[in-house]
Length: 123
Image (cartoon, rainbow, N blue to C red; front, side, top):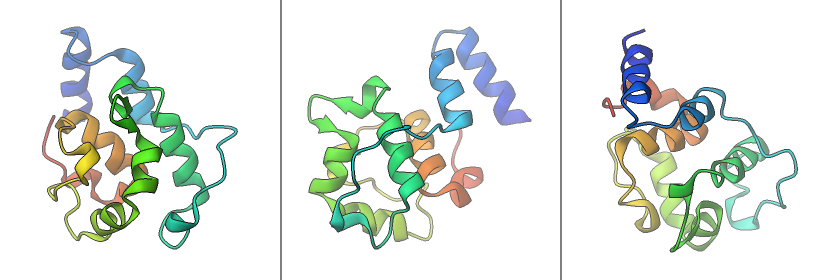
């Protein structure tokens, strides 16, 4: 409840966009994602891949350094290591996403490590 209230305050202050909050809560999958790369098949599910593709509608995940899923393909080993971290919420993200702020890290936790989202520090 406290997290939802805090996020509502961030939306009202303009710090967080309402569309982003809705996306975080629902984590909708892309209805027509491209095929998942072979390098991620051993540790990523089809639904997670579709949800990651959907995250690319958010500006931070389609940056000039490449889209999120492109980064995931190029640094599959780095993402697999992060995915396997016991405390992913505090572990360093792979190089293409190291500058992502805590609020946007919640999106990655929501999709890839939902078991750790409750342990994440507040945005």
